[in-house]
Length: 364
Image (cartoon, rainbow, N blue to C red):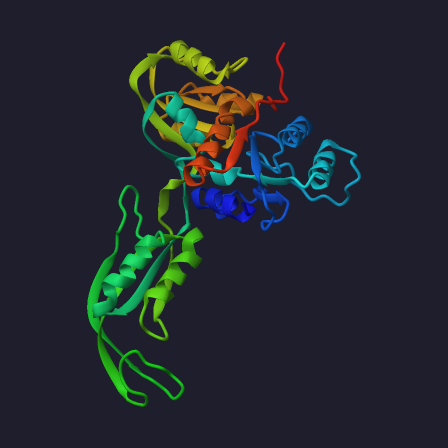
């Protein structure tokens, strides 16, 4: 199978444009045109993971964390990153990472942990803004439904839990076809008036090329008149972290023990207990200290994340319980998510989740 087909499946689910500016998600090593026969999924690409891929005959490794974050000026094997890249290239193994683009979607990394903890009514904790555009296009009245259907099928018209959303108004458009044109209606050299529908429809920025392509292909005019506006509205399905509610409130320590069992955490660092039952839970897998105050403003009783520094625990300020369960522990279920994303769309493709524990942190 061509690698680009697998990449398209992953990026349709978690578009690369949603990754953070510091990130390096996507195809890190290899050509999108190469043939791949089997994939190995892992959390981090380590040397034992490369060895396992070679052993099972996998020429594609899909990880959550990209092996390369910064620039590489030389490849001489002086550190583990260079050794892994060299070994992958030597063995014709492609390396692909789905990182913060997978974190920044409602059904991404954080949703799996939220589901395992039994959270209901989940929504993004810190929604992104400026990721929406509005398309305004003018369509001859009899062709409105065809163009509208094409735009919906391209992914436009989604607002929260609703799809096929648009607004239309009727009017009269006028134009004059010049020499060399091939007008759909009207005659060359004469001003023509046409009953048209002004159609307004929202779409996410990452679907811009697909939406415009669908518009052009479905619209009957030789020159399509349309406008695109940047929308400042926040998108509740795109952004960092997730927040939801337990079906039944729990005692703080009971809940923390449940988290420890579900994540198999070797230890949990947490702030002073507030001696109350908890219900509203916020989560940000990985390094999520930057959302502590956001979780407080959202009314979270508990904020679960990893990599919290000493002084950042003070930010709980006796209004919320912060639980640092570890970076790996908070994102470890990403492997099963990546597996299901690919299997749902390409069920016959050979794919395996690595059984190698790549967590570099140990506890005594």
